[in-house]
Length: 390
Image (cartoon, rainbow, N blue to C red):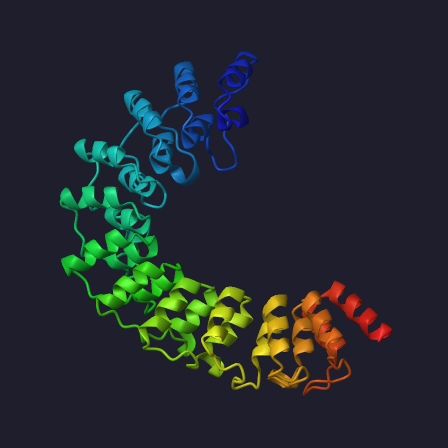
């Protein structure tokens, strides 16, 4: 199997002549035929088939055949060889996906065309989570496959088990041309929501597709959307670190840079908490208010210490707009936050800048007790040494 995966045809032949068992399977149930088909090693697939010791239709991982594996990874020559040798085009895997679903994921347009021409599966068949082939093509960003399915008359106004339609799928895939095509057809609302309340725009943001997001906004998509816990799309993009989408949102001018989300946190706080320096810098350069505090009393410095990004912490400290010993949630200082999260480098920066390690929180816990609660053994030893030498 290892030789087959690496495309070592001569080595496979040597091992077979030495008596190795071609019918063995790995932990996923895959045979050597599956392994070679996944990697697209045509000569090895032909050799294994010639030995007639492995059933061409034997199923492996998720009850998929070697043919399905070849389709999934777009290996057309292997696909053709397996079909020629009698592989079954009608097999369905344990997720409910058929050969057409696999080919649409793989994005090989000629393979998809062959399957459709043989009329062996329904073009609108539902696979995993009730997803149709055209949804998979859109979800994977395969424009040529998408176009082929549309020309062949597939149904576009369908929803999967999660309530996501073709536009949701296309926004996850991030192919602007597919999204634009769907919008022009006017078959689904640009602000349609899935069962979790997520619109296509939110999914585009989650995946970091700024160009798709901008296209949706241009087509009257609602930018003033709120996601989970009262956070808007700006907060979400900052938390995920998608700088391009942050720039796009602010350029539209419909969401204020210092709008508050969960716990009254601002966008710059989300960027700092999640350690995204490029987003943080962009917000600071665009005059984000660094002096805001959230409803728990946390400052941007507290958030930066939780995030553990040294550059952000140093940047905040250099601006001298936040007291290094300011009290946040549970009356904890930034140094306590860094220690509790196990961020040794950030903790050292604060200590070197004069952070007071004798302070306690609202329960009377000092920095060592806070670390103990987090279970950071190395941090405990490091802080003990820092306090000893101070």
